[in-house]
Length: 119
Image (spheres, rainbow, N blue to C red):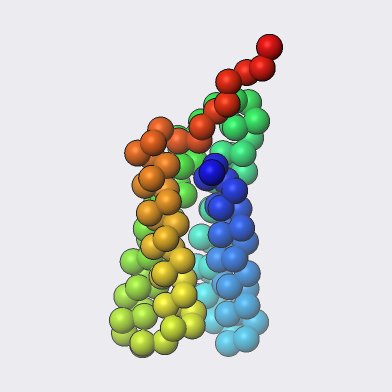
């Protein structure tokens, strides 16, 4: 499975969570964090997709995806430990931990598998 197949929906989910947190609670921290991390994830996902269309790997995009996932895992994990609230901190921390593991797997296996060119 290619990293952008999961990164783009993950980025939209993080972005939507930040906007929803702002709309429901007026939290500018939620808006900045969610929109910022979501936008970075979307950017990295689209860069990876465009590189794949050119039959290349984008290791920069993969590194950015991994960094965002680790930061979200740490920050939201700390928030979950402080508040014990499963929503949103626990859910985001859990999802980000799964995505971090996926990105580490992609790094360990050399990125996206580029199929051989048909002649």
